[in-house]
Each structure stands twice: as C-alpha cells, then as structure tokens.
Length: 108
Length: 121
Image (cartoon, rainbow over all chains, first blue to last red; front, side, top):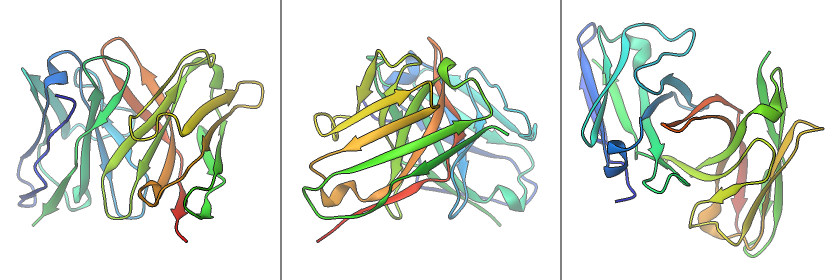
C-alpha cells in the first residue's frame, strides 16, 4: 500500500491526553514524522524519527510506533494545540514521500 | 534566521506553464535535500517532488511526473519547480520545504510561507 491513513477528527478535553494515529504498510520500514498546521499557516514539525522533538516543541508531544501504526500523543492538551495534524513517511520504495490525510484536533 | 521564501505563484489557464522559485537563507543550502509540497484549498498536504543536495537525483509524485521539473542552483541558494501542462487539479498552495532525509525517515523541518497557484480559465 502507498497510503497513510489518519482519523479525520479527534477531540480531547482541556488538560487530558489524546492520541492521534497514522497507519500504513510503509511504517514497518520507515519512521513517521508529525506536523501541526493551524489555519492560514504553514505546517510545523513536532515529532520526527524515533520520537525526536525539534527545538521549541513542548515535551507534552511524543511519538511512538508499533508495526504498521504510529501515534502522536499529546499529554495534557492545551487550547493552542487545536489544529490539523499530519503524519508523513516514505513509501516502501523509499523514492517517494507520503502524507496522511490529516486529523483535525478539537480541544474542548 | 533560517528561512525559505517562495515566489512565482499566480493565475494560469489550463495547459499553461508556471515557474515557482524558493530562496533559502540562514543555512548551508547545498547540504540539504529540498522538496515541494502542495495543499489544495481545504484539503490535506500532498508531496510533489524532491531533489538531492547536489541536484543529481530527483523524484516526483505520479500525479505530476512528466509535467513538473524540479531543479536547484546551489550558488544562488534557490530551488525551482517548473510546472507545465497545468490542470485545474494542480490548484493549490505550493510550499517549499527543507528535507531532513536519512535512511530511516524524511522530515520537513523548515517550511516556506507558500505561494498560491490557481489554474482556471
């Protein structure tokens, strides 16, 4: 398969923990990266490789992976975390890059 | 400051051509793979193309292969996307992104602000 599948929408109560998932065959071969995108803005990288956070990303963001499924966990979600989240990986050939369809996170 | 700035977007008729440019600053441009990613209005991110650090290797999404050409000029710190035979479905914001490419993953750690391409008669 050359696709990455994400749930279209997820909600979380303020201060609670939420997990956003990404599924695809290529995830058995490559790590996933995660991006947050707010309306009208470019995406920003929040997790890459084996659970690495770029400078400036809060430690409430973490990543994990098992088999063909990768997860982004936000522990103690904040109002500013409300956004669209995208996963990406390479396809099985390694020559192309895939994005998931995105998950709209609502913080209640 | 590490920065990517796209230019060249606009309105073009179906079948027409457009050339996007991305100017990089604040980092050693010649050390990184560079990518183009697009996003149609109200839709998700879609990878378009990538070029390796010295320009000797390129890859394209199936939807643009044969119509789009990516290139770079390491002396000028720019990466370009020549888009020919444009279709309505190419309408999108086009982002230039710096790739952090390893054997285990590709991550986009720096993004431009995007440039809008509209294909319409």
